[in-house]
Length: 182
Image 1: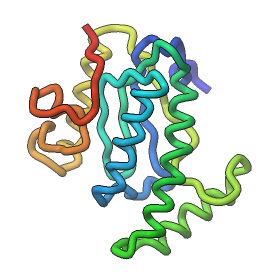
Image 2: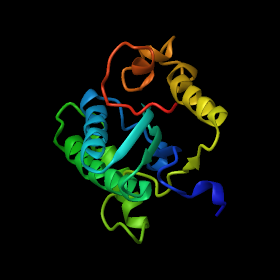
Image 3: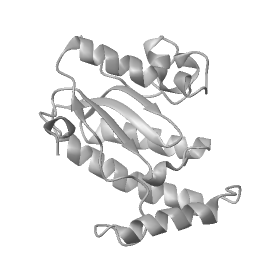
Image 4: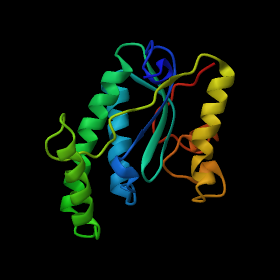
């Protein structure tokens, strides 16, 4: 595997993307998004995650993150493990989820194909971390993250996407505490 897709020194900001299995659109309901936001907040408060930027799309998540105290790979592993269990429970228990049986089938079939996961699998195994060593790399990653919902056609302006740090960067609200890079 290429060196550029491995976590390096966790103190350096990394551009990280992780996706749902089969790129299925899991994040279609507010409580699904909120599960991710709450889990990120927990990792910030309890695991030493420094969140510099973020965006939750319907089937993937982008982060720019670092940590002074823990390995990013461990934080992401725990985040993905916890959220996969939580989201599966929410999906199964949601009477309004018309795709419940289909989602369970997809997640179960992917889990059964993975020797590390015997039941269900929500997230793809990889995270594609890229260390951001220069300010220009950071600026490009930040722009990419915030423009993602615009390019997907969901909103006109980046700050209109609720589940993104674009609002924080525009000074509109603070959903998750960010650590800004100088």
